[in-house]
Image (cartoon, rainbow, N blue to C red; front, side):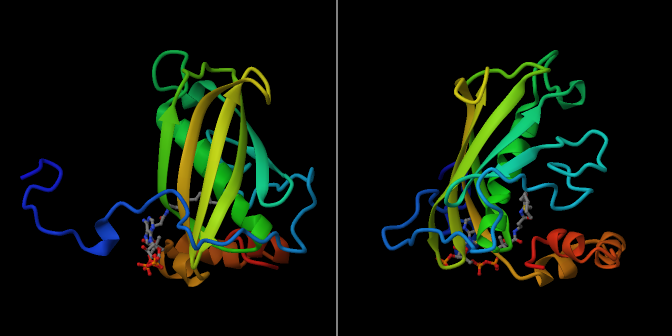
Length: 206
Ligand SMILES: CCCCCCCC(=O)SCCNC(=O)CCNC(=O)[C@H](O)C(C)(C)COP(=O)(O)OP(=O)(O)OC[C@H]1O[C@@H](n2cnc3c(N)ncnc32)[C@H](O)[C@@H]1OP(=O)(O)O
């Protein structure tokens, strides 16, 4: 018997780890014709988002920019509120920065997707005050699964790789948020008179 699976019973498919590499019959991602042009900032998709929202005082305030194809770049400045060990960024916070950057790729395809699996490698410690330069792109699409990869560099956009991640995002319908989110926040987001902001809270095409 293994410690990870003490009963040795086969796991149901939903509990099995899914590969992070696109399968052979995956297709190339398609950039939506109305996606922001390369070089254009994406802006926050939701003010209260811990990753990019401006209304979260201790959030990451990550800012992403559209790249060529289905790729983005982003910057995140590590603040004292993001520490794990003294003077160093918390690993979970760095993973959040990667997750947010990878999540923003959906906006370029005009697809709503949530993180299904995300695996992070931590290669260098990241001190407080550092600007983490992130780059992410989609490596393939298979049905509702979107495969993507990201790196975070320190010391400039071409600096050393401090963190990297591979992910599978799963395309969902807007009901994923409406049915599962707390009513208070869903109602507030849907009552926003700004049509674009209302739509982007759920990353839906306005
Ligand atoms: C919004 C833009 C910016 C956001 C940035 C931050 C992004 C986030 O952090 S999102 C929040 C974190 N993620 C979540 O809360 C997701 C929670 N999980 C869920 O809601 C569900 O498990 C969900 C929607 C992912 C999948 O459920 P469901 O729709 O029933 O999927 P299901 O029909 O079983 O599977 C569809 C396919 O996806 C695959 N899949 C399902 N779950 C996973 C998973 N966790 N990992 C990898 N693959 C998966 C299945 O194997 C299946 O593949 P195939 O078509 O080849 O058989």
